[in-house]
Image (cartoon, rainbow, N blue to C red; front, side, top):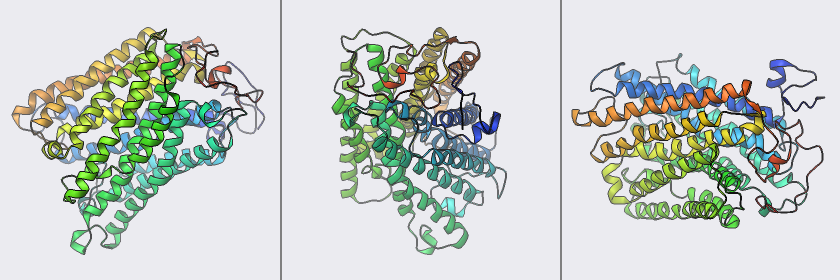
Length: 533
């Protein structure tokens, strides 16, 4: 396909296909990243409003807006969309696709057509998840974990939702495979492993998890479908199956999935901090190796989700120890980030504010995770709102915060436009206030014994639910302001230069937005990614 490079808008092509077909049949990694971005923000907004209505229901005891079965269906849908359509694929699919080839000096990923296939698989899984709501025996109501034996015996349309998650897993595997080959084979001249940007290290570690862990959950979901249709007796205790086996197989994937989202997010922090501290990253080697360490140890800690399921005392002690060990490489990153900021010429801009919010929120999530990793305290707070709070501080406070942080950091490069920073800064501060008002009371009510996933609650928990619901109003307002500000910038924003933030990695050496094949001349790397001399 012939293309005309237009620095005002690189998305305009001359060739066989124009308009919408030019997008749907593209193999350009940047266009595919933009398509992922549009889809994910759409799904995120839908799931956000589902969560908003769930919180309105919990404003008062008893029925407020909806019946229990509707609440259970919304609860399931909120989890499936947020986890499988936003949290897990978010950073790799959007920013990995757009920036990985540019950051290593390549023209595209190794398998461009396979890259487009991964987007179609993602959309097919998403559409199938939506179809599951309107077909079969009613709305899926199992929760996003699909726990057996309920998911086997439920008369709701669970099988379609399970198959949707299975297809989304295929998309994840294809993306991971593409990234690993691209990083191994397409680095430009002079870019050794330890001259790669740390975001690339995060994507590399994540890609191995995607390839090795995702097939396990894919097979598990298929087995549940077979169980529902053919009664083969793998998980159903009435047929001699073992429901605990499902939990093992599910969490062998789903805990490493936490790192699928957090490792690229941590890599993004390692890009933003040196840019706005105006100095090289402190401890490049330890940060890079800690990503691999998190990926490796992350495979070994799934059992901490099962301390109350009846597994042996020996295995519980081992899983508890490993849970504490996985906190060490995360701590290495945080201390190195702070050391990078120390005595830096810090320029406080919107992306850096996002990073500060992330470090604060994720630290709370990490520390409360150690409460759940300790055997005695986990028994007290397991399956309570304490877990809901911890989960959202880590998953949404981690990946969600940095998804929007990365979008603000790379927005000028992706679209060639600058956004209104005053509005963006206001939205970030409002985001942090709303986030903590929404989720922190859940720690308190969980410690006091409020069980999670319940449609109703005792009167003594009402004040905490009311505070949480008010927080949801603030948080939703902040996110809408954030998104609208970026949409306005697409049309009316000032033109961005090639390096508006003063970054040092390769993406800041080319025009904004990038031309079709990224580089007119293949770059040659002669220094570290964050060196300023």
